[in-house]
Image (tube, rainbow, N blue to C red; front, side):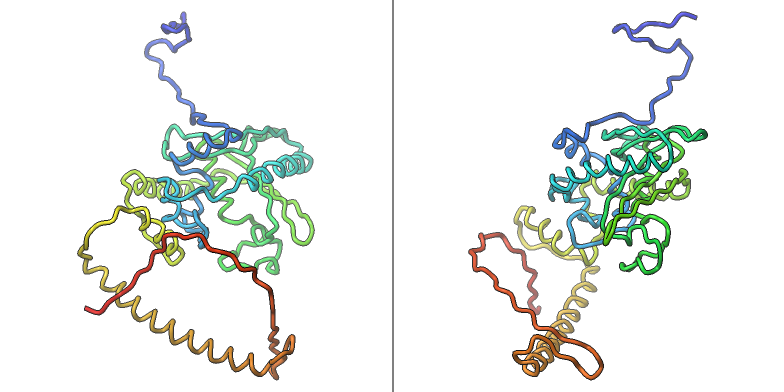
Length: 335
């Protein structure tokens, strides 16, 4: 059967034959950083997924769903710096060479932002892809470089952070990123290769197959998050979101008084109680610190009968003028 031709001269399938869509489209190359950053804001990327799943939580911008939501709407700057990105790219080539030596597989640098065709709110930038060793087809290769061994602990002694429990396995945030990359590319397997430092270098790698249950959870949570972005509705906040919430208030137009719902009464009561307890605790801290400081006097350190040691640290702080900025405070008045 002769193949029909389109108006532009491209080959198209004969009538009646279904068109097989590619699993993803290419949006931008990572080397075009500004274009790449702008494209990332139009979807949930693989590196965002651990935040959405709650695997990562911290006070740093971009490390909670609310902060990530603000990033996607352009209310917060991207967390990653240019220098960090350049250093990460340089380490990737070294990391990939170690993986290639240990596995005998072929590796290929990618560095392009992909959007899933089936799940258009989901995307990923692949570091490398791999193929080889006699029985594997093409797969994803995710490369990591970090000084923190708790991201891939070799023994219980390496676990220094709460919430990290998996010995001899990479951190769940890395596994979530890899499973998202497999979703976007429709590939069946991938590997995580990590160069770990502190105090000396270690290299570890491991294969992972596509995990249907893990991927189903990723799809559910990321789709729910993206609805918040599409509707510009803030997702739930947590204790790490105080600074981001203040930044959000700064960007809102000023208005008149609003009536809060009855659901805010609980937050009001808890805030009053917590502040009272905080002030009482701060007074106790300052009182007992003063007693110890007077007892230590001019000594550099002091030892207690129970073996505890206090040290006095002195440092010079240069004086400077702070540039004026908008500050957000929440003050309460009795009714």
